[in-house]
Image 1 (cartoon, rainbow, N blue to C red):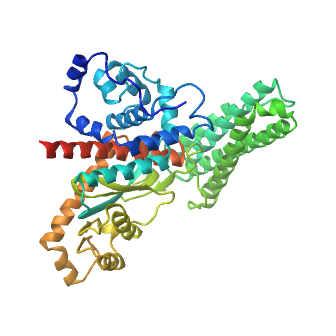
Image 2 (image 1 turned 30 degrees about the vertical axis):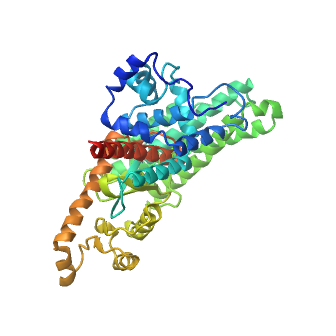
Image 3 (image 1 turned 90 degrees about the vertical axis):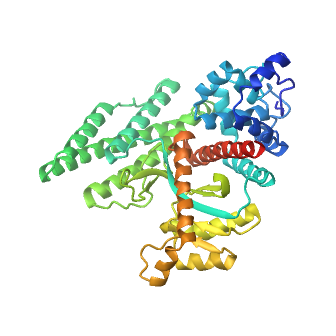
Amino acid sequence: MIKLRHQQPSLWHSGLAKDIEDLWEPWMREVDQLLEDAALVESVYDAQGKRHPKSRTRGRTQTPAEVVLRLLILKHVRNWSYDTLEREVRANLVYRAFTRIGDEKVPDAKTLARLGQAIGPEVIGELHERLMELARERGVIKGRKLRVDTTVVETNIHYPTDGSLLGDGARVLTRTMKKIEKKTGGLRKKVRDRMRSVTKRVIAIALAGRAPGTEAEERRRKEYAGLLTLTRKILNQTQGVLGETQKLSSRRRSGLRSLIETLETMAGRVRQVMKQTKARVFHGITRYPGKIVSLFEPHTEIIRKGKASKPTEFGKMVQVQEAENQIITHYEVFAERPSDSDLLVPAVQEHQRRLGRVPRLVAADAGFYSLKNEKTIQAMGVARVAVPSRGTRSLERKEVQKQRWFRAGQRWRTGCEGRISVLKRRHGLSRCRYRGFPGMQRWVGLGVIADNIIQIGRCLAVKRA
């Protein structure tokens, strides 16, 4: 059963409530009023109602929608884990008042994690869009300027090598088969544990990779061949275990459903890793179709953005576009990495859709430039396009890029890099701690909403001062 709000959110008596309210940070006062919007709470309420078919009318009373929304925002504003969120809210009267829990019981960390999973990327997108409408109504953003940039949000994986991926696959397959064997009370053919041999091969490959010369390279290939042989034997054993589970009764098989699904999924991924390992090690093919860099986060891409400090990143490309007052008006997590030059026109179109007007100034880095893009957005009504073309030989173009308005637009554009840095350092977007591509979208969306909440609160506090 779910509800919108607690019936009595205040803390014990009015005198204590007044003392606690005096301790609120300035942005919290403005955000508290902002989060009272009915549409925001209704979006979370609807998402909670979809967890189970009869969530609205049956079962134990869930955490109210208003409290869930405020707890998730507080978590990302402070960049806390769910365990830290539970501890801090239980111990701090200011957080109890801000989240509208009052003297009610604070949900434990596991409950908070489940509630966070119930709020999917679509709901978070609706919350962000409604937040932009509220910011526009209060005069925080007017849509006169637009700046856009991209970054990489990394998935929570170790550095991928073929040897470590094969080792991960062998470990997961062996562990899952042993669980099935234990639950069934024993299989016809006992599961053989080859992990000791696999670990030796993985370590030998790592040591051979450190040494230079053709002799070390031959030794490394030999160890890879041995590791692939062991992995193939484990996969064959996996097929045998799956074949035995097919012969079980439907009642016994139902208790093994999740383990069987895990075994089938991981077996398919390990086969893919074996294929790409053979192609790279023995044939020198590095661009193998459907390449996997993590068995647990298969959506992860290899992205190179030319950074000297981190030439290769493993994650997903994220686009962030802003208007005035450092408010993020739109974000997008791409399933496949696009070219930056393909994103400028859609960014202006999205800005127009959300804010009802074409920006007067558009600023971006050189990666977004193309002559076609510039002419297209100028035809849409953009007066000034501050996107540099560094490879130009045109004297006329060079003179345009030296003009005062162009240089001012580029100085304003660099603030987008600062905003991305804040998102990563302060709101946890340096590395995604949710699983799967929808989890990545949810993680990025909550971080963006948390950052916008603070910025809108500060802007409103300044306007009132």
